[in-house]
Amino acid sequence: MNKLDYDYVVIGSGFGGSVSALRLAEKGYKVLVIEKGKWFKSSDFPKTNWQLKKWIWEPKLGLKGFFKMTFLNHVTILSGVGVGGGSLTYANTLPIPKNNFFSSGSWASLNNWKTTLNPFYKTAYKMLGATVNPTLFEADKSLKHIAKEINKESKFEPTKVAVYFGKEGIKVNDPYYKGKGPDRTGCIYCGACMTGCRHNAKNTLDKNYLYFAQKLGVKIIAEKEVFNVTTLDNNDGSKGYKIEYKSSIGKKEKGNVTTKAVIFSGGVLGTVPLLLKLKEKSLPKLSNCVGKNVRTNSESLLLVTSTNKKSKDYSKGIAIGSILHTDKNSHLEAVRYGKGSSFFRILTIPYVPHKYFFGRVFGTISVLFKHPVKLLKTIFTTSYSQRTTVLLFMQTLDSTLRIKLGKFTKMKTEKEEGEVPTSFIPEAISLGKKYGELVNGLTYANFTDVLMGTPTTAHILGGAAMGKNSTIGVIDKNCNVFGYKNMLVCDGSMISANPGVNPSLTITAIAEYAMSKIPNKSKKEQKE
Image (cartoon, rainbow, N blue to C red):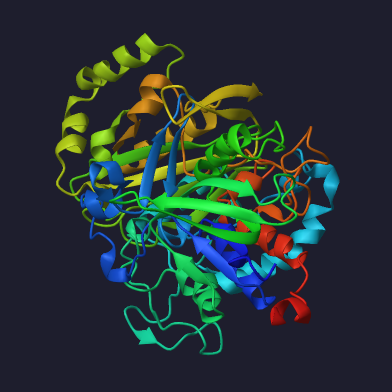
């Protein structure tokens, strides 16, 4: 093994990859992290999401940001790219799923997950600097008003988030890790969490897991995309792997390294298509379940733009400052973008929930005649983000898709089990209407949601789910890949049931659990 370049190569630097890198380094292993996105400093983030070159990731078009939109035939997916993965663009929220998550899906019988993961959730909270949002702003107050209106006020609460609050705009020495971490600055409640925190308040992974991993010698190479993984023994990987990668930006330079073990942590949109390609090419023993059991949070994203003359500022606060538990299966969150971030206005159209396509088209056109003043006010407002609240509705109710490689596109989806995901959820429609009436607003949605009826999700999960064997899952209960030695999956694609809430904390906790099962590197191996 001393002839290999690394003990572990981690492909991707999101929540699962960052946890893996740090914990393996602590166990004495030599680790390399390969990330296809860029490194970002606070000053690199865009001031608004109109700075597309800094915000959107589409390098073929010269866009080298950290936010990506992927349009598939059943769903539109929002995801993050860069060193720190989804933490760069996620909304900071860290909820623990309700009990149903731990006892459903293909992993249900493999462990007492609620009890087993409890200490790892606590570790994740500590590492991510989780705390309860201390201040409610206008969007949160409006959500609280809706809670009272539907007699659910006791089910409304501030979110637990990965943000340093402290004193607004005041820089302090590391407040989390006994002074061993980076300096932090108190949140100024600008609402721009999802376009990248320019103020050093958001606890992104480069400020915790990856920060300490590097201190222990973990090497991170950015702007490199893995395109092939082969075994060194032409069998089950017992003698190690060769990892081949190429530049993801600019000139397509190639490189390769050898490693004892490999961990796939590129998220569903990175790990699943890569595994599908490898199964056809160099890793034929991978389970036939690769790409199966893909889920969203059964969510709906609605944008409500207020038309009041003296509209309140709905952009003030953190990205998601509150949550309303509408019933045992459902949740509603009020989401915001910072001042000036109005890019999504050009991708949305009035929300018209109708069973048939032509009904939605005619319904959308009819808004011009039914609500001409509201429509014009929302289209031409100069303070779009200050007037707009994004309502994120999520459910634990389950349905699954399958991701396959497309002939003309990189990926495509197929219906698997349950109802096909839809953007027309009755509860979401009702709540959106109530919120619209409260703020005298007009409700919009992504154009694909309205015209095609396919939902938009920031929480794509599964595709390399757990199972008791390779006929049911891709990985075992400890995230080891069936068919190969020293190969794991630690990212959102390992999630094997619908959490119904923002999944970042759960991905972190399961990755912590998986890494706890790997023994320390022996003294003999360390000497070699």
